[in-house]
Structure formats: C-alpha cells, structure tokens
Amino acid sequence: MHDFSSQGVLKAPQRRLRRTTAEIRALILEAARALFAERGFSGATTRHIATRAEVAEPLIFNNFGSKAALFAEAVIEPFNTRFSEFLANSDRLPPDRERRSAHFVHTLYPFLRDNADLLLALVKSNGEMEATALHGLDDYFSRAVARKREQYAQAALQFDVPPELVVRYAFGMLAGAVLFRDWFFPDEAPEEGVAEGALARMLFKATEPRQAEG
Image (tube, rainbow, N blue to C red; front, side, top):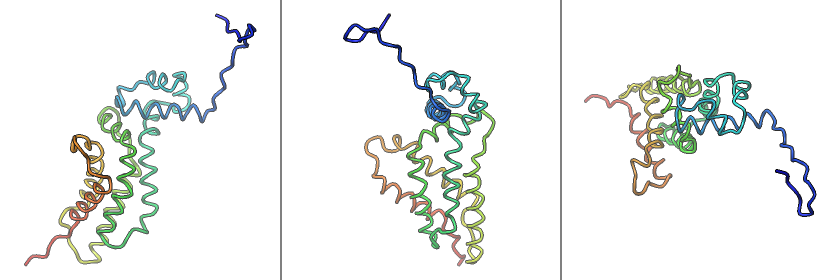
C-alpha cells in the first residue's frame, strides 16, 4: 500500500535512523532490568528481552556475550557501583556510632527504594544461576566488619552481636523494608523520613556493645 501526500504525490519511504551501539546497549539493559525483575533470570529469555528492547536477538550476544553477563551488567553492576561509591567516602564517616548508623540508612535506603526492581531481580533469580558476586557489597561487608572490630578494640568494648552478622543483617533490614513495604503497611505507609529515622535507630540499637557484667 502506497503512502500519498495531501496533494496526491507519492511519498518517499522514510528510512529508520540507525541507532548507535550505545543506544542499543541502553535499550537492552533497560529491557533486561525490567524483565529480570518481572520473571527472574530463567524466566526472562533473550528473545523476550530483545522483543522488549525492539532489537534483534543476536545483538544481545554481540554486546554482552551471554545472558549471565547481561544480568551482571543490568542488575549486579548498579549495586557494585553504589557500594563502591559509598566505600570511597567511608573515611569521612561521622565519628560516633549513632551518626554512622543514620548515615548508612540515609545514604543507602533511598538507593534501594529507588531501585527496588534490582532487589526483585536478585530475589527472583536466587538459585537459578551460578552466584555472581556483588563485589561492591562484599567489599563493604568485609571493610565494615574490620572497621567495627578496630573501633570496639580501641574503646575496649565487646560485641553483643557479631559484626559479621550485624553488617549483613543491616543490609537485609533495609532491603526487606523496601521489598515488603506494601505488605507491612497495606493501608498507609509511614513518611519516608519517619521510616528512615526508625531504621537508623534500630540499627544503632543493634550495634550496642555488650554491657559490663555487674
């Protein structure tokens, strides 16, 4: 079927603008992030991702090599980047424990809240593929544990809860507050400032040193 102008002149077919490699990669990453969050690693096939991104399926492999590599870049890398940035500023953390707890929550909770789809992708993909290390998060865990041990030793304090558990469960607390927010508060959720304040206070209490006997 030919396309004519209002004057009855046959229009020349419009050529689709050629997309750059960067644009194609961005489209694939956006589609992959959404589908991994919806269906998990196994449920989101490369065909589904290509269809959502409106690209040819071979372009996924040309740009990322494999679906596992695509998952790592779409889902894992944002976590690694954010926690690496957090660690880069760790030397400038507030000196007292209460302010450090608040800093941790106020810095990372908004990131998790704004990227809840990444958490969903991780949860829905658990056990479906070989573990891909969250290097930024793992590095944070290791350095946070070492820092807490040093701080407590300098103050001659003893841990009431092992720091290896505290730093991991602290992250889990923030992630759970994001993932289960609608279940926790089906009628009316607290204001974000109130939620962050409560989480910071809970974390502060969880890291209290062991009380001296007697």
